[in-house]
Image (cartoon, rainbow, N blue to C red):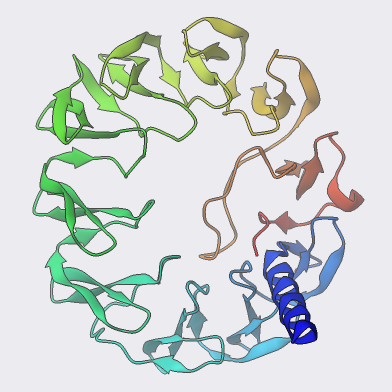
Length: 376
């Protein structure tokens, strides 16, 4: 019994490790392959088209058809589809003979109540489905969670989704229960810190379910988990408010971005610098553009036409010689990150793409025609 338990534990550890592997899609010599986080080419560049890895599978294109490969590069679903989307919660959308279907990782079709447009499952195993002009929710057992009720349902964020009927917005949870009444002209995505909303021309935040107007605000940006403050506009200037809707940093800036590691990039006229949560200038207004800090304490800043990376004192630790424009090659690219993430930053160097490490060196000493962020 002890040996059996150890064997099961080993298998679970190996399975967990397999799914924890992250690969980046790269294009080299007009073919797509994948590298690991050491920069080693783990799946040779051999595909005319490919998607990023999701749940251990990546879409790949061969002989004018799409299929799926695993992390070893082997075909697990043979290329037989006209179009495909990434796996989520064990299912992927595929198009064959002008018909969309959900398939599992063995290629089996899931029978669903969907009659019209198909939507991806999310990481919680929920997908939208439409009947006529209304949208509802179903799960991966093809069971209805919410009958088609709304004109629009936006993607779930932390278990909550914005919904719209007519011109009014509200919010539901994963069971379809209304958590914010459908009575706002604008509404932010769900945030644990606070949610902003608008009624007509009045902008405010929801505090214990009550709409609290932010004085003279004409726009509010979403809160993040990194700070108790978010930026908001009054007239033509931008400042910062707290979760109670109070102005904490007066609107004196032309542009701003979110706080991270206690600092936020802000602009005066055409120059960017950084302030702390008390509104004090920490890094001078020396840059043409600036992005938020990463967990490693480095932030991308633009000098003239190119980007480098500074630390929290404003010291340039990686020279400004890169482009960092987020974006992808296909429908598979989403949520691309500007700056460092897990110790690497996706950058463009001259006419090539790749990753640099925190010491400014190219990952694996290699540059590519293009490169996408790591996924698993």
